Image (tube, rainbow, N blue to C red; front, top):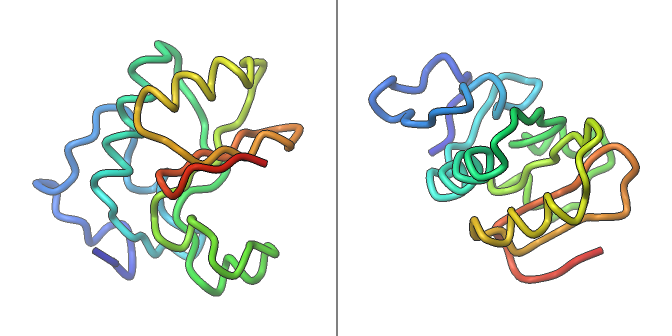
Length: 123
């Protein structure tokens, strides 16, 4: 469900333990709530046993174009997350994310790992 601003999300809808809507929302404030993806993300954080920071989650079409995102980016669907490394091992992040249902992995970046619940692929 798309909301014009993350403040509009009913509290009864948001059942995540580790994340608040502002962390998932686009920099424009818009948010697309994909409950399956968000629950996978919450489970991922739980299994890691350490806090994680996201550098990107949902992106509005405007924001995605502005940052040079792929035209069909998983971020536009609300089921992709860029996890800041902060000294964490990329392989540990990938293996843990796979256990949580993530299938797409962007491993080539220096400061983050991209994870999504789209089709199985890696780059």
